[in-house]
Image (cartoon, rainbow, N blue to C red; front, side, top):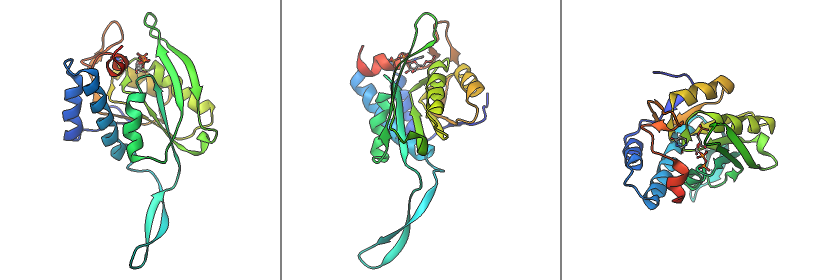
Length: 209
Ligand code: PRP
Ligand code: URA
């Protein structure tokens, strides 16, 4: 199955770590460490076409021109599980600001429930990386992206670890221009809305709940 505006990052180092993180024997300490590492590695691909501008720099020998990112970056983890990716992304983008969107999905209806929103005041002038390890039905990512758009954000990239085909379709049904970056498109959702083969409940595995 192929989707437009979806980038699957197939780098072997990421795929090796993805395989390890799927393993149900990985305890929360190992799970957290792997998620953090994968998030860092994904940043290279996700930001590959970020615009840059020229910056003059004085080396010990002479002046030369280099590059800096043209736009500021805001990282927006979807709570809770998105927090597990935040430090990994920040390691490579230490200047980024951080917003937080609290969304959980109701276990019965699978509908997203938004419970917290805090964004930097100038978020609309920045490149936003919306992060959450899982794109299942798509409800949480759709709600978070809609909130960001209402706040005036024009440039969003959604970064996850594992995406379900159903979630990609639903997400791009609402937000077709928002690119999705993931490490895998898995087979399907089960009857409880979990991704198969997936990695289980990401929040529970990160936080040991
Ligand atoms: C998980 C995950 C996503 C959501 C994906 O969060 O981190 O936010 O489910 O499912 P969806 O695509 O069907 O909306 P969860 O609701 O378990 O909350 P948590 O992060 O607080 O554990
Ligand atoms: N949320 C998760 O954490 N895992 C899934 O498989 C689906 C939704």
